[in-house]
Image 1 (spheres, rainbow, N blue to C red):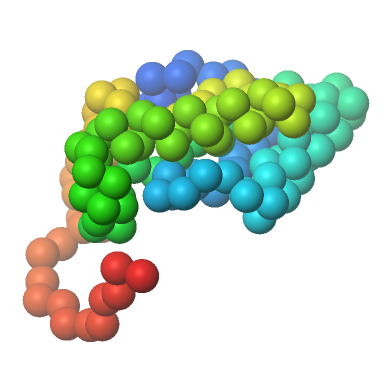
Image 2 (image 1 turned 90 degrees about the vertical axis):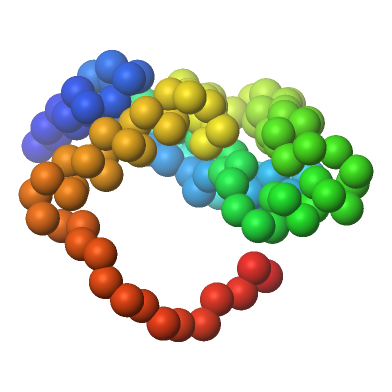
Length: 142
């Protein structure tokens, strides 16, 4: 039995039985076959849900934050935002060229994303799920 997914907290105002997502791809390089595999699989799941009479919503996009983005942009001699604008477009164009269904192409650099993350984090903080403490561990920009 399918139950509608509650995305009322989201600015996308989606009503769906099933939400399908791909990873949000780092845009530090052009899309390759590994990226296509995940998106083709998501498209397959979307189409399968639709065949079963379910309202599905497919979300994909690019992750445009982090030291790796800044390093890649610096190496290319452009701003991180300019680099992400260029490389995010490669992903969007690749999915169109492959004929993949996409309901929402999400970019983590957009104000809508910032607002949604702030809202979600505030909800978690208000519930006591986020707390401040010391942490020590290994980290690799990779």
